[in-house]
Image (tube, rainbow, N blue to C red; front, side, top):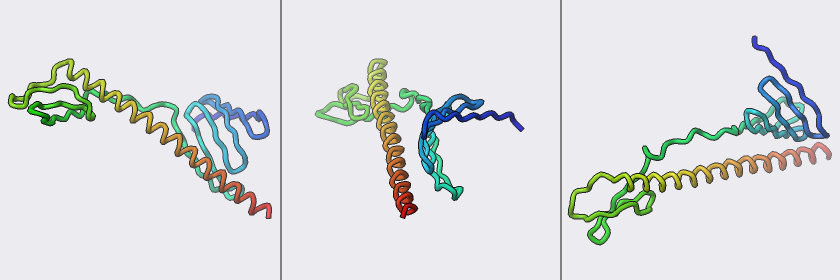
Length: 156
């Protein structure tokens, strides 16, 4: 059995400073809904007080390791006005005469293709982060609405 340590200090009516073996964190919320930030990331917990039923979502603060764009550059070629145009994500990298066999990409063309691919991957990651934040906010709003309704029902 491993050694455990945990201490919670109240900082206000709804806020706590949490100390543990893994680090320091802060959590805030009311009975039934709590959001905490600590060394392992952001944790959102919704529960029904007195029932022992809860739902927890953990969001890591660390980003996923970056994948090399060089291995995944989607190069396509299409013929336009007697020339073959090589594209990466729809952006032109190079163009060659159509009648001759295709040569491998030069260093400059490959570098330009990698830059375009990285730009698109960065935009995709940014959109994914925005969607993740929107999903967390949606969960927060939904849980707060449910908690409000339950509170109103109990008050009646």
